Length: 368
Image 1: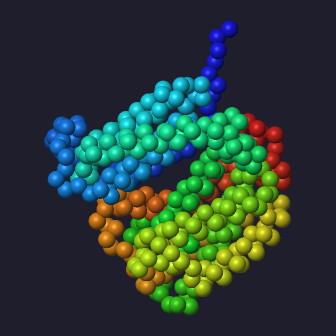
Image 2: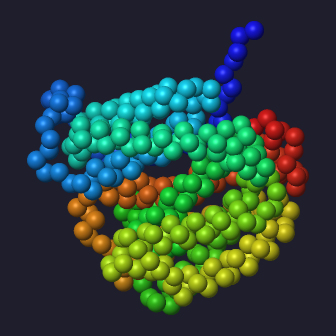
Image 3: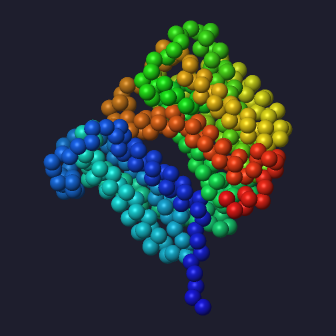
């Protein structure tokens, strides 16, 4: 009787796909001015070592592909030999980098580079090594992450999509802004001026309201993708969001100000939002679902109405690094569009799982 390869977990595959799409966006940002350069597409592969070399760019290229190598090797069948898995994962990441570097030939603002290709491939290779050691133990059939996901998160691709969206929300918190948990700022994305002038009292009131609504929105969003009312995963998501914002303000502001986000309005909003979230977790699931959508809409509206804070000063030296500009473009886009994807997800979950009819997940969840 022929043996069959046990299928790998879908979660690392879905995470690897989502991460590859993020890499593609960062590599091709700002997607403007496409035209043929007139040079052979693959000439960059044999180009000499660049005259002006920035070590930080190479480090960014290596680090950027580390998670991709980790996820790719974890997504491959568990019965594959280690060498085969490492080779296939590294080759897949290298081909992705080759495709993106070649596409940069057609963007006037980008430069295709064999050094970048080498750094990306090296980063993926380095990522496969811990991926072989810990990735499969996390995502395998009996892995810790797989057990946690099965126990707490709704089933199938629906649950995976929710986890990806939570990860994207955390990424959006790395945007260079002092507003904690704010997302959905399409005003700056479209270059529209703030509709209201700045005043300290107005900004503090908006800040408190926005933080309160955002705590409710992300907390209830995470609750809607979970099987049971378990508080600690929600608290963990919020704490990771605070950590990401602290890292962003420490990196992007002058002088380094890790707690620049902790304004009086934000502090009050965190306390009020936490109290309201605790109360909302006692409501029936259908009401939690509806409240999640309402607070997402309200917080998105507020972030687009808020006046600009004129006292924020950014670290201008970071603009000398092209990878920083690409990363900032990626986080800004994620930050702007996240609430709309989250609202679509909530609508889909409510429709597929029948939460508009019952406070309990129905039997269809097992098939999603």
